[in-house]
Amino acid sequence: MTDCLFCKMVHGEIKPRMVLETDELIAFEDINPQAPTHVLVVPRKHIATPNDIGSEDTALIGKLVLAARKIAAERQLSESGYRLVMNCNRGGGQTVFHIHLHLLGGRQMTWPPG
Ligand code: AMP
Ligand code: ZN
Image (cartoon, rainbow, N blue to C red; front, side, top):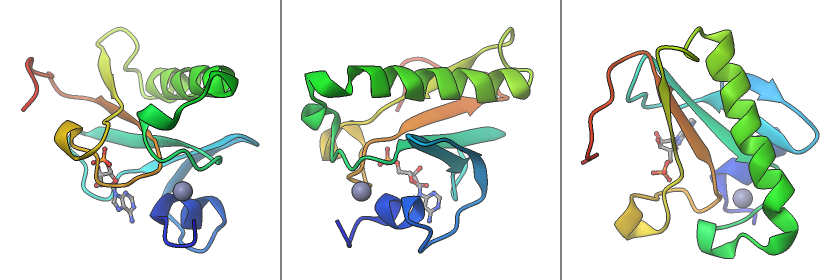
């Protein structure tokens, strides 16, 4: 756990540009933004990948989505639209092994993603 970048943010050892903090999650600006809005929503609980989400975590995952939606609304993205992404393992593009929801918006998203 000590080697986990996002656990260090949760514990205040590394200070990202914080957007939102609750008792169960934090949200902060991605350091390498892929869109005008690129926020990561991260549970305080260390869960390595989506494969490791348990049935006891279902409410927590819902809270990640609601937090992302709230941030999108604050940035006037609700109507224009935005994208929520959770990558799983290397093949899915995951590089930080503590689950997180990407909130991307402020530009036209394309499909399929790269
Ligand atoms: P993923 O590839 O889905 O695991 O996403 C990891 C994300 O974390 C990438 O978009 C990175 O740009 C972002 N990231 C890595 N290090 C930091 C950091 N120190 N502060 C903020 N975002 C970071
Ligand atoms: Zn962690």
